[in-house]
Length: 163
Image (tube, rainbow, N blue to C red; front, side):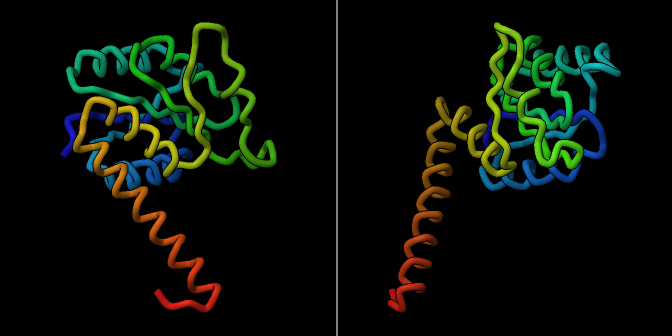
């Protein structure tokens, strides 16, 4: 197992299915993750206490926030830590999709990445953590090679060729 941790912080339990998809994808890279619930608006003290505990953990980290509607959660997490933050907002039917603007329009000095696909958020976390972990970079490359092989096989199949 990679010596890293990805805390996945949701704004409410309704975000859990989206967060679970991220956890499954992270497991494919052998990265430990934990699901947590906190709200920047409703429980800021709880969130800051949680982040303080994570900051005391010596393992490398990437935080992934899962928050629909108004994404103050990603901004608050990013402002309270020096580790990378990835915002991965779930689909919000109230806005006909994802309220992406609340994730993109954060105040100056905050810089969470925004990735809409759960597997993509896990991949970005793996790439960030792999910057100093050659074993993790190897896992990322293996996943990438498998995708290429699948696409080449699908291309051959639709053209009626056998590989």
